[in-house]
Structure formats: structure tokens, C-alpha cells
Image (cartoon, rainbow, N blue to C red; front, side):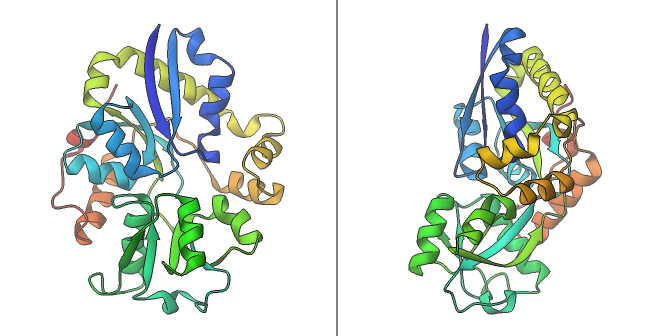
Amino acid sequence: MKTIHIGGVPEHFNLAWYLALKNGDFKKAGINLRWKDYHSGTGAMTKALRKGEIDMAVILTEGIIKDIVEGNPSKIIQTFVKTPLIWGIHVAHKSDYKSIKDIRGTKAAISRYGSGSHLMAFIHAKNNHWNLETDLNFEVVKNLDGAVECLTEGKADYFMWEKFMTKPIVDNGVFRRIGNCPTPWPCFVVAVSDKSLEIHKEEIKTILNIINKTTIRFKEIPKIDEIIAKRYSQKIEDVQEWLALTEWSQELINEKTINEVQDQLLALNIIPKKLNYSELVSII
């Protein structure tokens, strides 16, 4: 039985993987799929892919594209979630900041450089016509718990994270959400290291086939809203809203989208150059 290591954020987007693992779907196909939660998100996963600690990652589109351009020997093999990720823009509940214009030039908490929270801070700044050199400052906080601590203690001023995962923190009066910033592209893709793709290509194809069967019927799973609400400490109405907004994919990301992401990252000086489509994706 081949062992394949995969990483992803411990969020409701990835519940399909947990359900397939719990059901033994991968073992039935002769694959020992080992899932690892990455609470720190994209930056930690790109590092793990580079070091060979994981073979695959369910990862933010813009984050893995940036890292492949910068030399990560990996490829995108499928879109996983084709709808945008809605990033909530949060401040401490007791903060004096009331609107987006108030946080211009203040300090953003980010999980790490190269993470989604870092890259989306640039997208948000561009959308609001900020000066990217003078209006963006960062404090590395590692994860959501670190952001709660830093915003509460005033070490950072705002934090961008997926709005539904942070909703309980807003409801509990720790954060206030002052705005949203959706990604202008499909939010999650599946990426695999070149080395693992060469060695385990057939197993990786099987893994995709299995997870795709799960995501196709994900919304039809009985009481899926209750399962998500309980597992991720969410209100049922928030889960139902999230399910209505979220669509999974079983297709490879297209060249037009890849170019649009690179164009934005290049315009923001987040990447130094663009790569050809074939250098970023692999058809398996």
C-alpha cells in the first residue's frame, strides 16, 4: 500500500477529505493517504511541498502560483473550490477603527509572508487605491489564535481571514468585521510536487477520482449543514449561507484564470515574472 502525504487547512472547505478518509475510501483503493492540518495556511504548505514533507496540498490558488513562480518544483493538478474565498477584514472588537478607510496605513496581521492573508492584503489595498509601499505594514502572527492575541493586545490593527471561519470570533465579541474582500478567482486548487507526481502519478489520479466523487455529492449528504456546524462550531444559518455560496470543482484550472492571477500578482510586484501555463499546471 502506497503512502501519500497531503496537507490542507482545517476548515469546512476540506471536510470532504475528512469524510472520505473516515469512510476508508482511499484504503479501499490501496492508498494510505495521510492528512496533515496546516493551521498557518498557505505559506506553511508551500514550504512543506518544497521540503518533501507532503506530496500534495489543497492550497490557495494565488499562494501556490506565487511559490511555483519563485521556484517551488510543484504543479497545480486541479481546481478544488471554484468559487471565490470571501476574506473578512477584522479589527479588535474594542478598536477605534470603524471602516476600511480607517485602517489605511496601519499594521495588518498575517500568518506568514507568502500566505493568503499576506497576498490578499495587497489585493485589498489595490482595490481601495492605497499606496502599496507606504500603506501596508505587517505583523507575522502564525495563525488565527495568534491574530486574536495580536489584535487584542494592539500589536496589529487588522486581520484578513475567511469570513465564515472567523464568524464565531465575531459573534463572541473578540473581532469586529468591517468589510469583505472576495478573491477574484477560484480559491482552492490541488497541487503536487513534481517528484511525487513522477513517482506516484497513478495513485494521485486515484486520489482525485475519489475526492471528486465526494465533492460532487457533498451538498446532498444528509444533514451536512448540521455536521459542519457541529464540527466547526458554526451557527447553522451561517453554514447554510456558506454552502449556498460555495461550489467545488473536478476540473483543471484553465489558462485564462492562471494568466489573470499572474497579471494581478505581477502588477502588485508580488511575483517577478509570469510563467507559461504548462510550467504551472500538469494534466494527469
